[in-house]
Image (cartoon, rainbow, N blue to C red; front, top):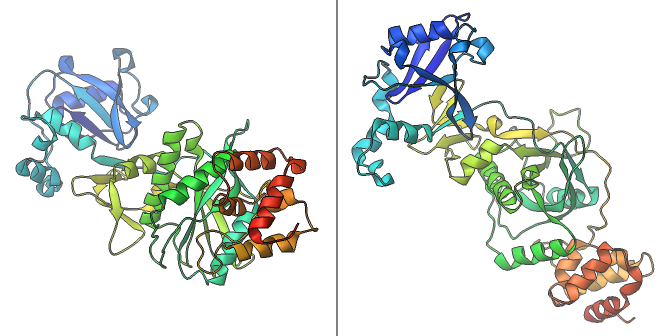
Length: 436
């Protein structure tokens, strides 16, 4: 098997028998790399974030154990420290076009803040630019509970437009902790201002709108627990730009609450393909999570979408992916997403989703539309149910005081205090031009 040995002089590769012991490896290092046994300090590696780091050293008592019993597999990295001076014995044609050589020549490394770089400095810098991609781990969220009225409102709009353009929605709900694992409950979906096309997501800067929905949601005891991306029919799961968008939103959730934010989910709505005979209906919803590695890499803009293929990520010029022990600048997205399969648990929010949704050009929120909404429900349902709709509350936030009126109204909704809404009902009917 192949063992990669990282030293202060570079990374070198050794081929060794599958049944070899740690002592055999030490002898091979002495023979091939010219590092005497008494100089060798071998240490394990640990995957800390996107790059391997030095871990605990091997002890002399482990010399007789096979490498596999010590957890070393084909292609793994170990760290070798020594005091002597030597030259790297590895010979690789890949280094002929190594972008790091150009970085040294052009002075980029020196611009990092050191006037003189040692080889150890260089190797540490290089290791921070190598991203080892592996099979995605299990998602932090084990389930997603969604009020079907919320997702259906989004899907119906996409069906009306023929899924011609992409569409983004922010999932507002609650983090759910259960003995079997954590998850999220989605109560409502807010659609931000956007000018998306069939190929690209274009979110319009709307700091005022984002602040308003965050405040109203907080008054309802809700936070942003995910994002939903709707897209036209296609064969692949996510584009690279969609991965980057979702990962950065995921990172914001983690920054706000490190323990709960890791359960942030990414859902998608799409048309059912003609080849998917096992799926009923014309549209379907799926749930995923961006991996911790994807979130970490997107935070530092480590990769971007290829100009030729939206499924392919390309690293910055001074970085590379390591896939199946091979260094490469391009990779596909299956390493960065984990599927959340449990999304069918019955769930009904205390919020409805019947009022016209904000930022849609086809059905804007207007006083006339509010009057129609109220008139259609008068006498048919309690006023508490009528007003308990995030989209309706967002319009009310334009007429009620956000510091006094809205917190009280939202509190009554959460606590189901229908008998304390008479004053609000009178003001809302007056604003809509309805008689009591």
